[in-house]
Image (cartoon, rainbow, N blue to C red; front, side, top):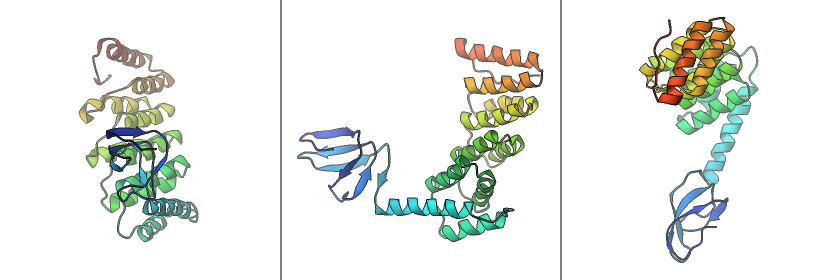
Length: 241
C-alpha cells in the first residue's frame, strides 16, 4: 500500500492508510502519491479525497444538517430553512459542502427544501456553479416541475453562472415531459450563446418534447441537426421556427 524503493509517482488503487510525513491517520481513496525512497511517501496530488478526523467530523456535520432540514415542520417555510443553515454554518461553508447539501437533498426527493437551500446560498452571495444548480434542476426534471427548472436556468443566466450540457439537458427533459416544446427548443437554441455543446441526449429530449406536442416538422429538423453533428462534426444550435 504505497511502499517502494524507487523514487517517482505511483497509483494506490485500494484504500490505504499512509503513515509518513505527518499523514498519520489520513485515509486516502484512489490517488497519486510521490515516493521518496525506502517507502517514505508524501501526498502530492490525489484524485479522490483525503480523510482525517476533521474531514470525518465535517461529514458528520453535513449529515446532521441534512437530517435537521428533513425534520422541519410542514408546511415548510423558507425562513426555517434559512435559520437552520445560518445556525449550522455561521462562518459560511465551502463549495464542496454546498454541493453535498444540495445534491443530498435533491437525491432524497426533498426538492422543496433544496430549492429553499439554494435560495439561502444566493441570498448570502455564495459563488454557485453549475454543479449546485444542476443538482436542483435535475431534481426538478425528475419531479416534472418544468417551470422551476426553467426558472433556475434563467437565474443562472442572470447571475452569469456557467452552464453545462447536463444542466440544460435536465431542463429540456423537464419541458419535454410537460409537452412544452416551445421552451425546450428555446433552451436548445440558447446553447450556442451559453457556450454549451448539445449532446445526443439534448436532441433526444428536445425531439421527445416536439413529438408529444405533435410538432413533427420541428422534430425532423432537430433530427437533421443531430445527424450533422454525429456524422459531419457540424454543431448547429440554430433557432427552429
